Image 1 (cartoon, protein in one colour):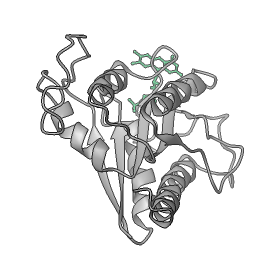
Image 2 (cartoon, rainbow, N blue to C red):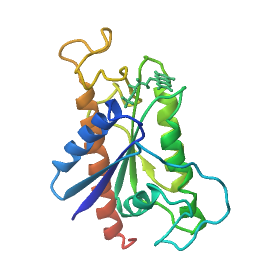
Image 3 (cartoon, protein in one colour):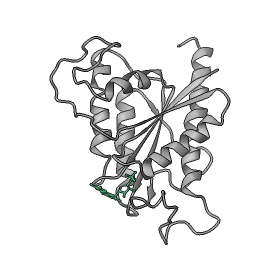
Length: 216
Ligand SMILES: Cc1cc2nc3c(=O)[nH]c(=O)nc-3n(C[C@H](O)[C@H](O)[C@H](O)COP(=O)(O)O)c2cc1C
């Protein structure tokens, strides 16, 4: 049974979030039968303008705005599991990730649900208590509204399921916030890998279950 896991970084930088999502995907890819794909929302991504013109011609074309979403719509539809990552910007997800979420309106308007897909969330803010939970909440809300099943950590309990605290550039330079993780404790990479494994494993269970009850 082959499954696909799509990772999306909502950062405008090739920074912490991208590395964290990649780490989750690398761990998922170690599971036999798991294919991974990665998209960065860096660059131009227009917000929804509520033009009331969707759906144009689904699934060939979902939105009248021509940009990166053309590439993202089919990837979202094909994925069994999705990992959305975002830096915390003013206590929530970035404008880029919010734009991507809003631009998913054509799915609903075309009667297409993302049901039975599994969703994980990775967030990073510069400060502890910087809004990581609220950014995770925004991602989970998107999952609930689209039919995606949100999942947390499977193997590592307690730490980091609601996001991590690193300033821009810290992960690239392998720097650690002084107060953050004492020696010998779980690292950011462990937590991201756990999210990748959780999303992939749960996606496999869902796929097998759907087949078993003939619900695909
Ligand atoms: C516009 C802006 C707003 C931010 N707001 C917050 C915030 O509310 N809370 C926080 O902890 N960090 C905040 N940050 C810091 C980033 O979340 C942090 O540096 C993050 O690690 C950057 O991730 P990246 O390298 O993937 O872009 C903000 C950064 C920017 C540029």
